[in-house]
Length: 252
Image (cartoon, rainbow, N blue to C red; front, side):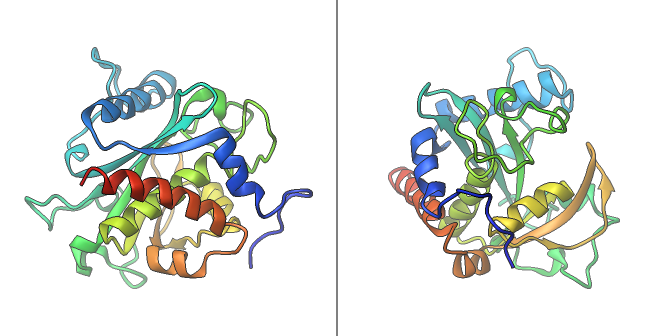
């Protein structure tokens, strides 16, 4: 059962608040991908030190060429303030493991779910989720690239549901458009709990590992989430899905 919403939060406030403050922008061209990689560099390299500082100020890796990328833009400033990606299997080598399959190899429980035995064209991995510092800097969030707290306040530090949940819903919308059935991720325990309380069911598929903090391998079943989405979240998801699908359909 979903946790109760904070006092005074109305069902419509999810979608209305999102439209007021943010918009999802799929990174569907080189210019938008540049903003994606630059934002990642600011968070993962400069702020957190998870990745090396690079002369071009772009944080990229070998998985980006076969990934779907997404940005969040602040309506008031037109500034990009968040990003995430879905890593797809390498079309040149579909059996090659996704990043989480390597990082959490010893922690995965194949009796729960075995990614190696799944249709590799129907899976992907959510990663490189990042939110710029002024939207997540408070006690407990300094060492994480995204916000993990439920904050419905209307101020300069609006967080969940508008930021992190919005990015996850955008990933689900992108996955649905691409025909991806299962999304994997390495998640912080508190983040898994937070988004589960807001209507996105998270299935844990292994033991915790140490990877830039405590992370647990998890799976999101796209069809299940869309079909069973709580009425409080549905308008929020529909708003994001409409933006995502309109953008990608105009390009592909």
